Length: 294
Image (cartoon, rainbow, N blue to C red; front, side):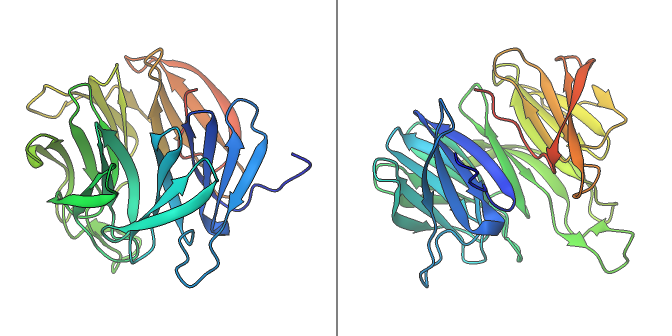
């Protein structure tokens, strides 16, 4: 790519057909590459008053020629990309601070985290019309969501955080893990991960075991929740390491914990089997927050 600088803070990478979408949030741009060769194809940057690329976070493919990108600014929006022309075709207003996205049939679910404010909703978009058809109340600060084997959506809600007694950071509202029934658009399961008033810890989530297990981490423990279970597990499958990101391979059911010791030196990927036994580790770049399995 002739020395092209990818930019500041690569938040996420998503493959859509034969193209790759790279969200570079601190450089306020979207990079498009050939997913097979990683050859640079286009840079999408909106410098107009609308600033549709102001704080791009995550992408999802709607078809091989169309994708959604969450723009996590205060006035939340989903940017619609035309992947034939590598341009922005329109935007869709959603809740504040949209983050991760998941598709179920002809709908895309958007976690509205609040950005620099507070939100507690998930927006549902009809991908045929690009219109929000439902807004579901889930819990404060929903940041991550995944689709399970039954086609339901699991949402990790971080809860509001109180920094007034720093360095003792506590929860103003509880952290929750909830499940959305995608037929009724209602919450049919809800678990509290961190109670109101308790110390606040880093939370992460991934889906694995062919969509049958939700892996989630609290502080330095990783747990595996079967999607049919009515109670949270009491024993962690991985202990002793806190992770900045958590991913699970859809091909071999490995669990990948991504650790960022700081934001000035390389981080690490720790690979585990499905029962939490460490396989190996490898040093990677600064601030690893997720993995894409090609």
